[in-house]
Amino acid sequence: MRVIRKSNYEEASMACAELIASQIRLKPDCKIGLATGSTPIGTYKDLVDMYKAGSLDFSKVTSANLDEYRGLGGDHDQSYRYFMNTNLFDHVNIDKSKTFVPDGLEADAVKACTDYDAILESLGHLDIQLLGIGGDGHIGFNEPADDFCVNTQCIDLEEQTIQDNARLFFGGDLAAVPTQAYTMGIGYIMKSETVILMATGAGKKGIVEKAFCGPVTPRVPASILQLHPNVVVIGDEAAISDAVVAKAK
Ligand code: PGA
Image 1 (cartoon, rainbow, N blue to C red):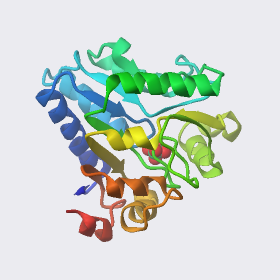
Image 2: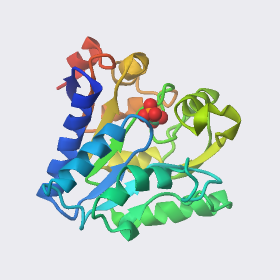
Image 3: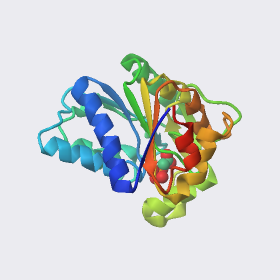
Image 4: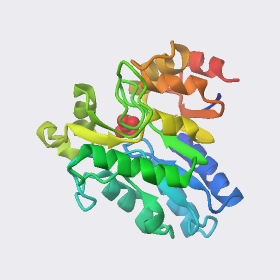
């Protein structure tokens, strides 16, 4: 496990963007797992800036996103497809036909999940998977549970997640946040060659420490990353405690 602790959000975002950019430069046809939420917005902005400056080429990159709200189509401004388009895909030369997000409009949950698993299987493993972490320790939308879920699943979102998402998105309207989502399973996340977990802000400090210094348990889904051979935790001083830094090998 590597830990990169920067003094603020901007520096942490740039460190994350540089890791992703290095992967793309080393292997232009790499496959990258992408995340949504407030945390990666700065990183996506930095990647767009690198592209605009002519130092990054997305033309051969394939991407797979972690999750999507069940019931929201890609043109809904709170859908994760829309988030990816507006924060990254619309501003770089990625081939959108090679960007994958679960189909939120597929009402048949079993089909939505098996379809996404088939796509992921066709990609093989990812080179990098970018993750945020939820206040309850979720990665993607894999919420605390009795077991680690291997495959794509339809999940009932926890109350804390719904509240967090209403606070940051959906104009603060709790009732507007969907209660279910389709999420890539933890099995596929763990198959990625490298996993980058980014966490910033004091609100994440406790859960990041629990995830990386506490026991490995499905009650804290991110804790499974302690077993990944190549995980990089990137964050700011507010989110990354000394105990997490001390765990770095
Ligand atoms: P956030 O969400 O980046 O908006 O804090 C992280 C997550 O829920 O994975």
